[in-house]
Image 1: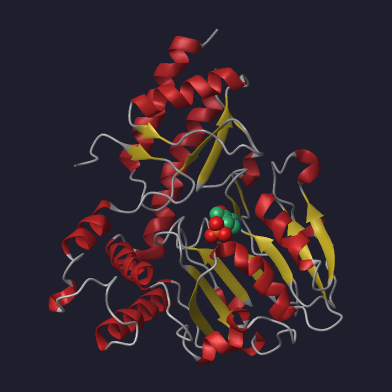
Image 2 (image 1 turned 90 degrees about the vertical axis):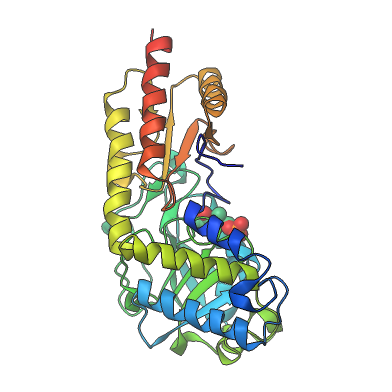
Length: 363
Ligand SMILES: *Cc1c(COP(=O)(O)O)cnc(C)c1O
């Protein structure tokens, strides 16, 4: 069945490129003449090892990951990193700085309190997480074990437009919903992590990029599977890695390369986001939910001001094949997630429908 008439705006798991799904479909029962599906082969086989090695090379190249950093393919979702980060980096009697700019960084900060002292460097909670604090608003402790932030707030639709300056304090960043959308300077980070299901692959894979000098400091009771050092030493294969997801990531990275890599994605995502925000800024019905300087290019949150009308919009849009536009229950309103694999045509179709809806419902 084709899906020519639908566009999926889901925040995650989210749209994957058509080319990737078609290729995976073709190779599903016989990968590369092996007579097996990637789902069926041993993770220790040479066929899989080749996939594994190549996806690391592709990701290293796509994000220009320096040799000082290791790429890990883990499980447990981005959420397991909320525990793994403090367990590995907090140290005995340590403290860490957290910027709370949304739901996921809030959960991460609360989790970290189990393992040490957490200083809230900034919080946007009082204003409903509608903005990103500026560098000068961050209260930083030069003695902190690390500084933690979430670069794109999937639920509220805000995005950091700068990399925080923290001196010698390592930066830890949850990039689940904007990784691979633009070039980044990986050398500035101690740890970058991302659940794959937003911009990389199906759910079940978590990518961690870690400065190797930070590994090996885990608290003594850290579960075996949650130590970065072990995973680095075993090249993410202490146990069975999520083989199928790693394979899909490989196909996504091939697709990304064909689109001009992260530089190509940056151009495209800026065009797509500007198209929607320009419409919102001139609309008589719809409004952006966040402060203009903090708007996310990946998750666009908006509303009509009337929750019932928002619901009608999401329902009518779905009937037109514009899927999953309802906002997250914590933020309300509407949300269009326009990750890398969302084509410009999807964004144009969305705005066309918004215009039509506006004419019908404008009072
Ligand atoms: C989706 C998301 C998470 C949670 O990811 P899981 O893989 O479901 O644990 C965490 N952080 C951000 C920014 C997200 O978008």
